[in-house]
Image (cartoon, rainbow, N blue to C red; front, side, top):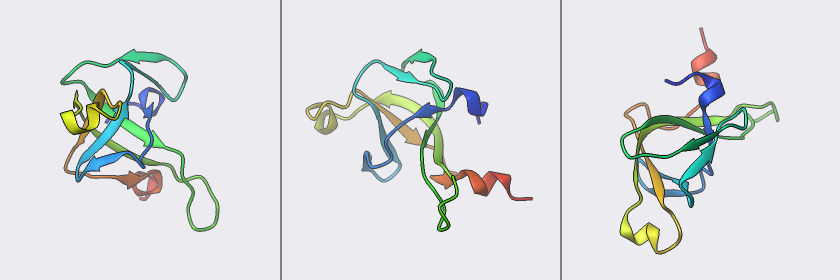
Length: 99
């Protein structure tokens, strides 16, 4: 998994199909620290979205996977790049912070 500072912001409402997340409608994404990354097929990235737990505490969701061009059915809606989520699936940060 990439260092958290290199995680990229994505909208997890953009699940295109099981295991495939719309990553971007442009050729670039922003990291958690505001740096711009140019997307390329085959890159391994960790995408995250802001979320909270049942008590309102920050508990962002994230998924790691491989960048690929979005399928044609999504491209016609503006999606250029997608993330093929690895076998760990979509998790919350609290999942990796547990001892």
